[in-house]
Amino acid sequence: MLLFTLTACEVHVKNVYDKTVDFSEYKTFCWMNGCEFDFDGPGYFKDSLVRKNLKAAIISELKEKGLTIDTDNPDLLIGFTVALTDEQAIIFNRPEESQFNIQPLEHEREIINYLKGSIIIGMADKKQSRMVWESQAIGYLERRPDFTPEDIQKGIKKVFKNYPPKKRN
Image (cartoon, rainbow, N blue to C red; front, side):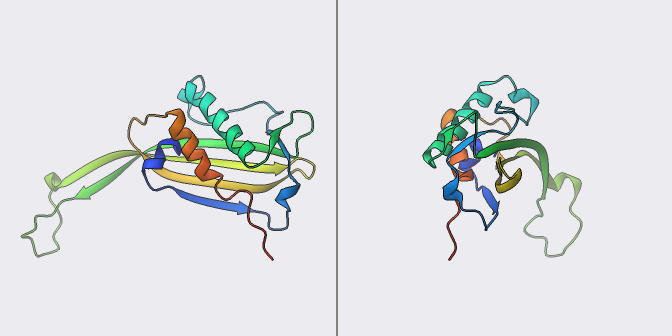
């Protein structure tokens, strides 16, 4: 989410959308902040190539879904947030010959550091000024992930996998 290098790991994607909306009516999009690409995420992405590749991947995926950019009168406004958090897991290694549930000794524990990444992409109906679709993807990354354009594209593809939502009869 972040998702880009999460493609090697399991990624959990959750979609929420307005079931009363006919998504086939949406043909155009623009960025939520006055049609300016505005990045909300870790500071070290602000001036990086990752930001440029993220924008390109979102545009590419939306175009594949049949939407085009319209900065004058878009149907949808697109916004997104990227978050990376440092997390730790403590694993206690108990000797196999131990049959009792005893408190492990300090030297029997291992601390694993990892990154938890998430990306949330939302779509708002511009005319109605309300959210109509949101996708949140969460996964775990290496400590120093390599955000290649290919990994970013794969991650964004997962976020948009279920867009547009299938019509329910």
